[in-house]
Length: 115
Image 1: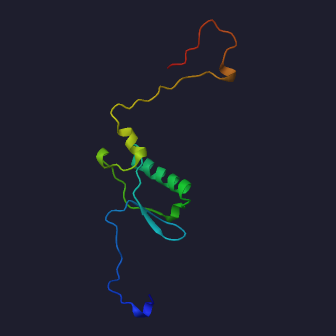
Image 2: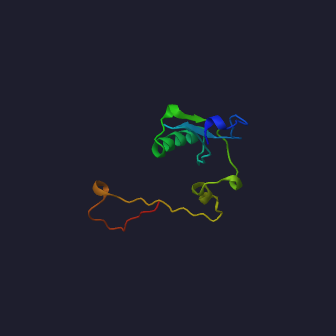
Image 3: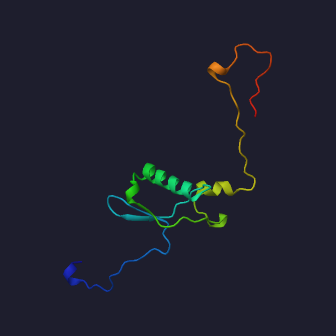
């Protein structure tokens, strides 16, 4: 259809209800709803900048963080965050393994790797 034969009914900008993060790429501005898991807001913002720099190649000056808020467990969307909401989740205990110069050549005890 040619521009001259069409009729403009409405011309307006559609705003997102609640964008949490936006960034300017080389082609356009994108709104996103990321989820990060951290203890402080500053840590969350740092994760956001590093994540956007690594995955989207976005520079810090092209990222606009609109809001940082705590999300309830039922409203989380991402599978990377949802995996921590299991009530029966288990984490491995760290082991202390002696390496190289700190390891004795001969000893009378078996190694103790637990803290």
